[in-house]
Image 1 (tube, helix red, strand yellow):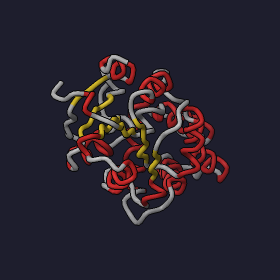
Image 2 (cartoon, rainbow, N blue to C red):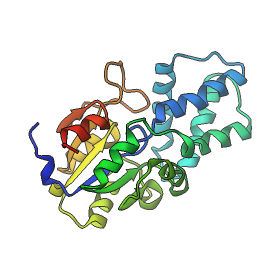
Image 3 (cartoon, helix red, strand yellow):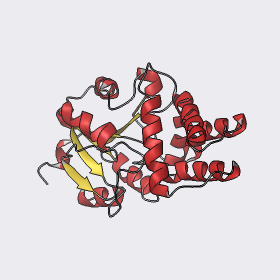
Image 4 (cartoon, helix red, strand yellow):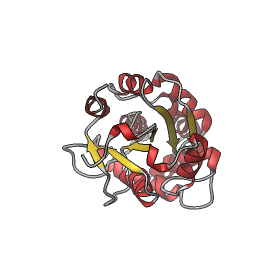
Length: 233
């Protein structure tokens, strides 16, 4: 490693994909929706790739709440597979974020890290959707910055500027930990914020539910358990 964990005072986390197993959550909603509507269900990798594309397209215009983004994603899947999903299925998909499960290493890792660092969230989500996830994460975050609050979606820089302002720390004292190279590692590098890539897809091909990116993190770990172990916590 080319940096010292001891030099940081705060850790900012992406939530979905890093702390919350969003790929399982996404697949757990999309597979049944396609099946119920008589569509052929593609492979998991194809579903996740298409989710990344539809989500990126839905976020590309003026800011809209993440629920609205997910409504468009559900409708786009329907169009792509030749059906119109019922309103209740679209609503269920958009609301499901708050019940997607944490990774098994997330809660123990956060509890260990909370004893040493200030912890913050920077997430492309609505406040009420994150509230459902926060209840499952087991710690009280010092700061939570959502897309709803900054009216922008990563990889735009608004989340990062806002969390640095709220933490009142220089960027050299903040470590950003995230799974998405596209949404998180790339903007962190552009802003000079040290980053650790949690490569939740270690050993698997493709970028999963995020757009591909060639951004390079300062360090890589396969999971949060490894991160905590490296810190000696």
